Length: 277
Image 1 (tube, one colour):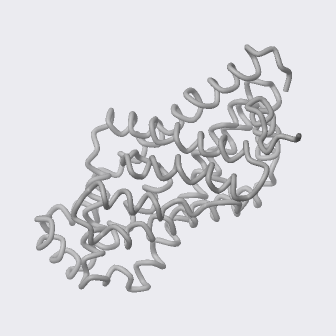
Image 2 (cartoon, one colour):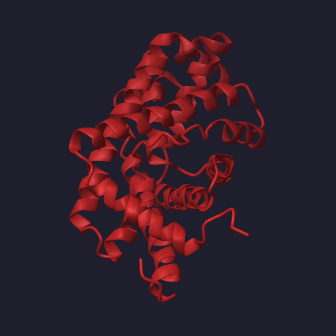
């Protein structure tokens, strides 16, 4: 009887093959697919914020957000955090480290632009007016929290986040059918949202969204009313204060995906098992 799933070594080999394809994508296609991934992650952030913004209990709010956020499935897009698994192809000498870095740099900025496009469109759509401006206030609150993270905390949270994101990619790769892939992706992604770990591409939505919301006096007033956030704190957002936290989260995401998942899985299932890719 044929297995309904791929073995770990088969999944790693498939990821290596995929990494070779990613490394050799034409620049224009790499940028376009990166824009798509950034936009889709932003949609997940926007939807989860709408679902959770009126829930006072933190655990319940994060559980709702975690159930809503995982929207990027089977789009064929290029996501920076997941592409850290390309390290397996580097170790296997199928691609060079330079090609991996090129892909990550291009995809990172494409993800950023894709997320920013959705930021602007969501802001202009009037969505932040939900709950009498409560969603706009919540968006400011989230952005302030993310720009106030200490560097060490941001790195560690980024590590934990991308361990789960990359495990989602690996788990999805074990399935031979669509429903199996959906479940493989869903639970680890939901887990990182519920735990509150930091994802650099998601923050490319949340932080600029908060900056935009902070330009609206009605949202600023609502943020003070609901959360005690001052106009000065909102002003700091519009002046990009604390946005360097995105850099530390990015570093953590790279470490989590490259070292804790990519290197470990390659060593366990290819190198130390004696199986050739």
